[in-house]
Image (tube, rainbow, N blue to C red; front, side, top):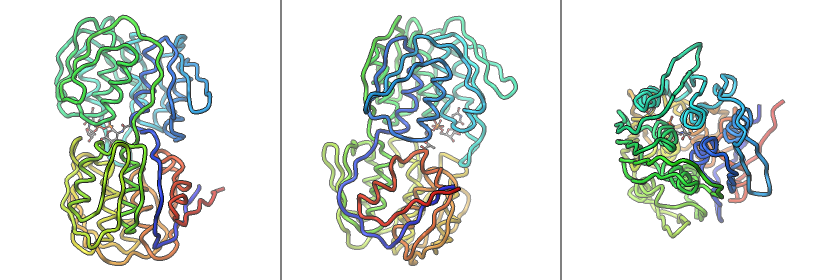
Length: 418
Ligand code: EPZ
């Protein structure tokens, strides 16, 4: 298995361009199934999870062709309605094809996604609301077997503003005659991006950016060219890497409003940050203060930036408290950060960080995507060469990570595994 060698303490400098968002393109790719017209997607990031979703679309019968930075999809001749266990077990987001398959083919057979490192992650909210919309759902041999004669225009209220459930249900309702209302919908920017993509294809989604989405059914969709938003979590990662190493960098090609809460939090801690249309500049700071943060659904502090923040808190000469409220097992990075010399106490879903102890290099291991990003940040601030193992976790969600870090002047090297 590949590993990364990171030398520190580093100073970063220069510009880094943010890739298109993984968590925007995954549901957008699933939505391709809805249409029998060509769909041209621009600057799809080169990530393992994206490759898995495209492989799933190909298995379902979607034609895929690449021309430079534009990938064209055509789901005119779908030949299957099944997402197999072999694929779904490698990427939970495969569940996003459930709604589109039902809307397009009135049937779907999708492997139940098992648990993952950060939590059990059930899909009950997806299934109970698809049933309210008229689907018949059976769980059989580890698969969701779903059929629908015709979706009904219903008013549903989610028991929790789940990102995935909001996306699946919005896609499922695209052709439903009448108005489907999704209340307590998630508000993440990736939801808005999916809704804007659907509307660009000719769907009728309104209430975008609010917790009450309205979907008016349409009969057909049209050819479209679309580019997703910048990755706010990738941007948050580079932002915290710069602050942890007290560096000055410029982050480009991302909408700073999508990480408002993150930037506000960092400013309150004493970081010097300026934003403009699609850029975020970070400058050297004097002394940083600790924080007391709870993760929450958007517009709160994103759970996907929690690990990175925790790593930053380790290098601040102050105490911090970080509480994880979204996933029940999202502190796998803590014992690895302790290996680098950090002082962190865990109590339930809260981490108490006594920062300021100098970090020193040691071999560490990635356990999930964002935990891995935390190890990168800590390794850039630590003294010595840190060996980061199992970096396949990183390749799932960070495009050209080492090239971008080297571009910022970091001393990073990938060592190919056998
Ligand atoms: C999306 O996952 C993201 N993944 C996650 O990013 C992100 O952490 C999460 O939203 C929260 O922001 C993608 O977009 C591909 P949820 P999703 O449904 O849709 C519970 C990353 O690092 N829940 O909002 O799975 C669930 O267990 C990944 O890029 C139910 O109980 O998140 C969790 O505790 C990790 N029943 C909470 O809700 C359900 O039916 C939030 O889950 C659905 C969810």
